[in-house]
Image (cartoon, rainbow, N blue to C red; front, side, top):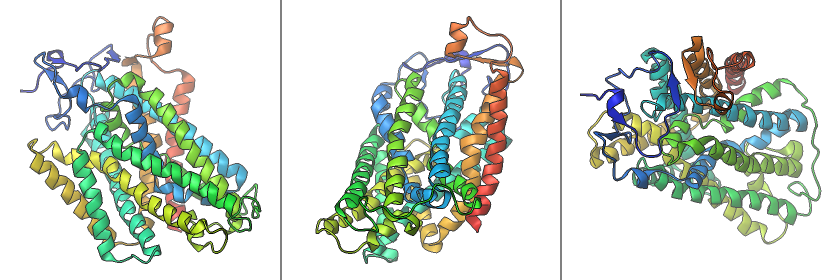
Length: 461
């Protein structure tokens, strides 16, 4: 029998941040198929002995988030500056960071409110509490496709990178998938354990940034030299390119599908937004550093993936040869380290429907890996489809859904969220959002829909 809300004692460190004035669809848990069975909730007044050890600390969560954000889309981000120009390109990167950080704040408010009863570990859980099963299906489809597409793209990127070194072929995809599946099984669903793999990924990304700068400093003649910059543009030649780049930029910041898992696995969830702010600041080192350096180094000759420019660079200092090999290995390590993070919510979606036995976990994660491998082999140009449909999914999840959650929570004065301004101002009655917040939410929803359609159209050209 499912215990009532009054019978459930939240685990230590789980803040009760939602205060509800009336019973609504938000505050009643009635879904018998709820996917929250394995959540760490102390029942019958007893604490789970494994609870504290399985949670991630502040800096472990930072490692997981930075590793999630600094993904394979970083390879295409310099191309945004080439097609959009310095001013629109840098504006898109910065505005994308601000917009998605704000929608992460809205998502956190919804997670806090729903966590007053039970902590959601996926966007599907959150959609069920706020909107019901119909919306849950749509949101679940969107984030499942987005995360599965990420897993497929990781296999394709790593195998293509090895192919550029003369190690291509189907067996390379099989080997890459085996390594990724092993990491997924070994990491399980513990964000604390995954942080070790994230530390490797973040370290590899840091070396990639430094290596790119060293490449430009060591090479004294262009293209590829920071000492002799190539021709660049302040404004785009064709303004349509600016709108097409919307999908690339937002996909770079699209970690919202995994954020509920990171939130639920933090030891102190009150630090979630502080952790996200630190993670975004660190991520901007890559999102600004690599595009700026690459655009200066290669200018209008910059390819869709800047790694292709690195492989084609000839001559120069002797150190460039081992440096190119190092960067090759880094572009293999970085996607591999992210696989377990993005596939964990998908595995959890299936694991909650089966008995909590280790053999089932191994079976599910191995099966997902085989499905990813089969898709990567059957559709080697799968990234074209991913770019089109992924633009719609990314905009829906990163912009539309968080804003809709915020409006739903605060509609008709149905909920008052635990907020600093609410505490300091002595509380507010009625709606918990101001007029400007409501307008901003609708702007995000409208902008997300339009941006998704434009990005999908641009990616299909």
